[in-house]
Length: 312
Image (cartoon, rainbow, N blue to C red; front, side, top):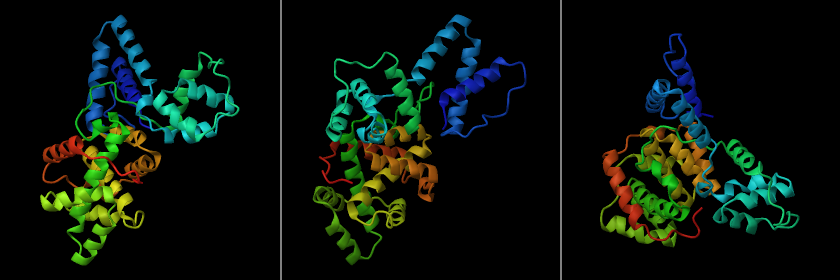
């Protein structure tokens, strides 16, 4: 798994050596061009700083690498980890989790056999459990250098409800865009198959001619047909697919992986599989432009209505 801190460490070691530096970082990395340049710059800054300042900064960076943003992790990703743990460990794990993350897990797993609240976890437990979860999930570290805060990469910091609403709206618009390439009768059957919560957005998209001419939508509609034959799960994955292609093309793969862990596991796991598989649709250019795409996404993000409770 790619580590931006290992990336930085590589160039810091190379800068500290009298030998000729290697031509490039030897391990594949998401957004390799931008990340490699940023890692080289930060390593050079570290090398030129005073020893005491360098030690302090390296200590801060090391501490940052050990952090896990619990509030940005969906509880469904922790269910299997807790299921595999002894009862005492489950109790300790629940004790250190934030309330919003802990409560769904407590409802899912009764508290029988858990240690008494009067028995707090040992002092070493929170740090060890954080490391265990990060390693088990393959949760990505953010780079220690500045990263883009633009959409879609910044969505991982949003709450699940906001992201779900956006996926329902954005996916419905993309779905309608794809249906325009189908014969009229077939397209009408798909319109009837839309979940009730998505129909107002579909009507608005048609009424205001807010569909997209981007050939990405018919392509991904067909690419997902076998795996997701029903309308709702397909349009939600279509929305995720569009976020992924825009993010990958802006070198935001680390942020996209964080977004996967922010979502319920069945959505996020699909994202991780597709990011690894690199389907052709990930490389399709964003039309008419990435700036126009981002403005439209932001508008829907701000106005998205409540998502369907049945989203899958």
